[in-house]
Image (cartoon, rainbow, N blue to C red; front, top):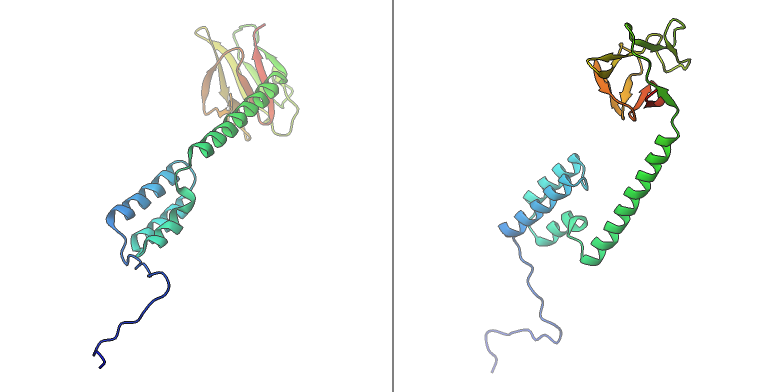
Length: 190
């Protein structure tokens, strides 16, 4: 006699059903990883927006895993190795900057006088710099109220102090790195 219902027999492992939906907690975790990745510079703004949209429409956990696989927190060993490499890179960058800084030619601060020291390519300047990136009338340096002040005079290629572009005037002191166009100097007292 046969039964109206027959059950198939399996000799292998029983398949595990895949969750058809992503939970809110899983989606929030993925969005958190994306935000952290964007904040730390691991994702560009466009990539962040693209992945965020994909996370919001993802239906399965494996889709989320693909979108965040490169952002998963690292293990302690990886953090140590990456940290050591970052510290070594920072150290070599500092050594490189220090080496370049010390090799800069010195620009002696002038004796205080009634007129500022004009700097530029034109021969009438007190400090003539004959380089194509220096404007004819590039900048001026003067002592005002006991402080040295460097003023950019609308130069084409700019004036910088310690790597920052001067707009208008800025106070300077001995030891500062100043650049007129591509000509760099270290300010030095008399």
